[in-house]
Image (tube, rainbow, N blue to C red; front, side, top):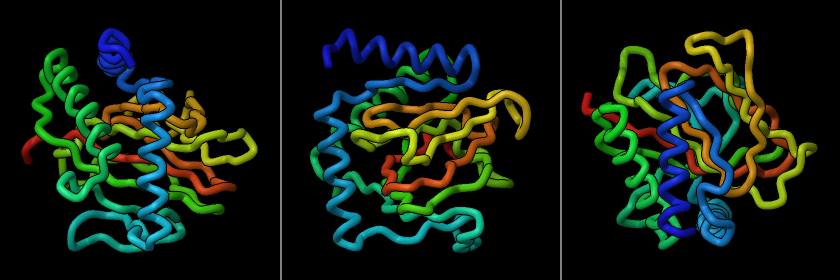
Length: 208
């Protein structure tokens, strides 16, 4: 991807946050970059490095398979492969661009690989935990090559801030697409996947 192409995508991400609070960007990563990242995720998944995801945070986290049914591996830059480090560098560019235009004070990204196996889902939720305000912007990158509508696993995002009803968008989790939104404002869910569905999900945080 050329520098100008990368810059245009960053500008589009910021514009989407400013105008509607969320945006979906196809081709945020080139196909070869996204495939390399998917390969690193799949290698770790097949090696048994992922763990069942829970709900809540810190000492209060619990596994609730009636609410979410996915497995995750938290990212640690020091142990990351080259494709993961390259993606984290792109996210750093996005963090700087968002701060420059929105003055949000974002200071770091925390995230994980996620795999929804066949039958996996995540019921409607907000990404900002009760009683916390450090997660400000959500960023989800999809890693699914050749994804088809019959594979399910769409992201449903309600587009009125704070409302879990009314208008919504359905987003296919296609390879290289990035969804960015204000973490505390938009209810969203993952519909049931019928194939293994991979992503990198994370949050730009402020100091709490």
